[in-house]
Amino acid sequence: MEKLQFKAESKRLLEMMINSIYSQKEIFLRELISNASDAIDKIYYKALTDDTLTFDKDKFYIKVVPDKENRTLKVIDTGIGMTKEELENHLGTIAKSGSLAFKTENEMKDGHDLIGQFGVGFYSAFMVADVVTVISKALGEDQAYKWESAGADGFTIEPWTKDEVGTEVILKIKENTEDENYDEFLEEYRLKAIIKKYSDFIRYPIKMDVTVSRPKADGDSDTVEVKEEQVINSMVPIWRKNKSELTDEDYENFYTEKRYGFDKPLKHIHISVDGAVRYHAILFIPESIPFDYYTQDYEKGLELYSNGVLIMNKCPDLLPDYFSFVKGMVDSEDLSLNISREMLQHDKQLKLIAKNISKKIKSELLQMLKNEREKYEKFFDAFGRQLKYGVYSDFGMHKETLQDLLMFYSSKEKKRVTLDEYVSRMPEDQKYIYYATGDSVERIEKLPQTELVADKGYEILYFTDEIDEFAIKMLLKYKDKEFRSVSGSDLGLEEEDGKKTEEAEKDHQPLFDYMKKVLDGKVKAVRASKRLKSHPVCLTAEGEVSIEMEKVLNALPNNQNVHAEKVLEINTQHEVFQSLKNAYDNDKTKLDLYTNLLYNQALLIEGLPISDPVAFTNDICKIMV
Ligand code: ADP
Ligand code: MG
Image (cartoon, rainbow, N blue to C red; front, side, top):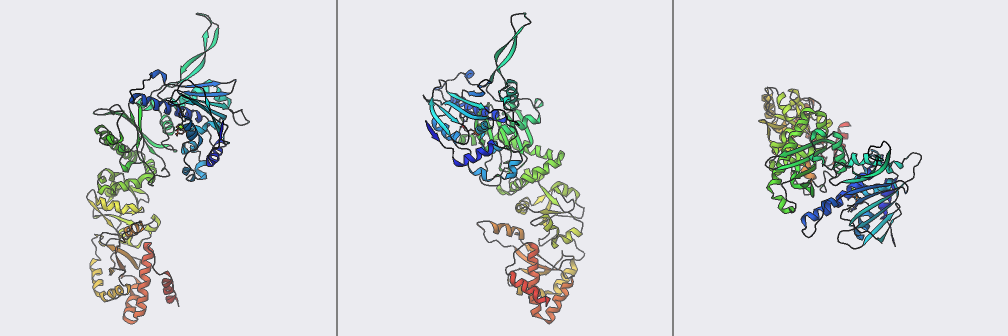
């Protein structure tokens, strides 16, 4: 008999789990039944697609066998079984090590489904068992094996006798402790309830011998207790059930059981279509962002079933990228079982389903926005960025689809608003949709550039996500209203002061030219500002690239060194301007100093780095003494 060690980190994880915060021990049964069902799926699928194999459908079942006397609970299946190597590899190592690093202590405490997180369903058995034994015979093998483990110390594997292909998991149920009752996992009624709760829709019968009372003889009032084999689950997959029969809890259980996420879903969408293409789908919008969502590791997709048989775990073609956060499954009678990944991509039925699904998701989101605002904002907090990427990507192809789902923070409402809400509130004289960009709402709130537009009483949208401005440049307009940045060269405002500024510009041209020379190519021009009210100075940009875009583009790894054409705007109504004029007339060294100071201040306001902070602080000292 070989004695093998669990991989070191498995040990740690196992210990953590066994003594865990995990409140519901009962889910171990869900895990074992789900593994049994997966194993039957595999053999069933083989039988359907391989002509050399023939199987009797009645032979596929799961059986749960409690034995109070010996304190054991067996979960037996007629699935595909495991070879010696599979027993060793699949039951010997817990999950991928990487996922552990992502979990913070808090997330664990939150009572999140720790087991699910790591895909270590099988190990949940150790929550209720001292010893777990697995006897398995794999399809196509002559020899069966017995795997056994008492927890973190390791496991043994030895040859064993088993006639039928399949697996038997035997739990040696723990003794009761002061705080824990383990006996319940040997009680028929309790096991029945757990199976009903979590595994009702499993496609194969889950059988159990249940004690029933029978009359001793016909017409006799005396009864005897006899065992009778019952099928506990209804076997109707949830997606084939009537929506009216299902509760939110049913959907939530399905979400958890399927491992779509570790949160509770924010919304479920149940679709049954019986038209040009027939399918059932259950889709979920998760509540929180999967830890890898905004990374390259994240794989989008829905489970794909052909007439009840799972043919693909993550079919990416069913979801557009902008809805990649959606989880769930699709079952269609119109898809062939033998279809390959490549063929699927060109499958007309699949394309039709994908199109329908996208439409449905959008309309559900719009409904949520209309009727469940808080929920929608929660959703948008998590996945709004993805929608904005969606507007921007593929050359703006999906902008029409997505524009009504967007939200931005409003200077007036002090919360998120939609573009439609913005436009419907616009005063008649307002021609454009105004926005300001910055790292945070607080920072934008203080931007001098917003002064004039805000003074006019116009609402300003705050763009705090890197993608925002790029997405909006793709959108160009909403309901015929163009977007304008408050930092752009033309605010498009009808100004009474326009003339004055132009005159000021002309009068002070030599001063501005001089300042531009001092700044030595750092700005394209120095100008009298039309937009400043109380601040002395700000930076704006001319042309397509804004200062915010410059920041984003230059932070990219393959940055092209893109630069915004910056303009230093001076408030000619500000006292400081008087000092500039005096310096220009009397003391050019002083003007050099002031120019550099003002420029650096403008950089600071924009959140741009100052190229020589020491020189800047020296300059400040100079004016202090
Ligand atoms: P998951 O089900 O998420 O893969 P588990 O820890 O539940 O993780 O199971 C690990 C693996 O062990 C399964 O993927 C499967 O390969 C194998 N396994 C577990 N139970 C069975 C079973 N009853 N029959 C066949 N294989 C099984
Ligand atoms: Mg499992």
